[in-house]
Image (tube, rainbow, N blue to C red):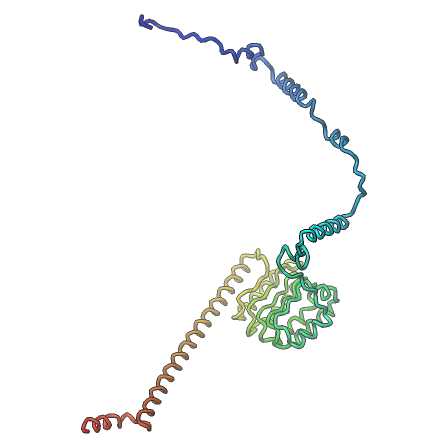
Length: 325
């Protein structure tokens, strides 16, 4: 304003906000009244929405007979084969699973009637009988007999996996006999069986001072391995320098866990020292062999030049004779 006095700004209500004047202010409505109004608006909005029962009732009945899963899979396979034939596409070898995995189908389990004679004859050095169905169904006496036939293979078997075939303490003596009779066995797995303290102690005694045993595993037995059994296995580790891995599952006892870690670290360090010493010995032998070869080449060259062996004392004399001439 030009007069310098106070001015006031007057504004008219916006036309788009005029409808708010007709509704009662929210502050004057109670919570119950606002909830009732909200529910009424929801009911008004959902009048034209059909319920699930009405949707199901509105669908036409299906006249097709009910089929089993196998019948539907067979029909799907037939339709897929027909589509492939129309397109001139050859089906993947081995079926859908082989095409998906890109590998051959799983090998059929070899029966013990043919497998045990081959193992007994020492034809296989890596034996894996994990989850072998026929072996699992045998009686415990028959299992011990089968383990005895494996022991007759002598030192041919280097890796033996007998996981989850139902072994228990009655088979421990046969396993101990196999371990003692095979000086080349370096890996043994007995996971997922029913071995407890007596059987594990018997097997651990056979492991003492074994010349080549490097890895053993008793994990996932049906019952938790007792502390005395774990202690006896650690004793076997301490008495067997090559044994760097002994899997006994989770160890809750702090003392046993520290002993187990210390034995693993000590045996690993001993193995590292033996390898370093072996490499050093091989390097020394190689260098000695090279020096010997160089000396032989020198002597051979001298003989070829003079026609006869030349001594160190004759070399100066021959030099003087050449100078005089």
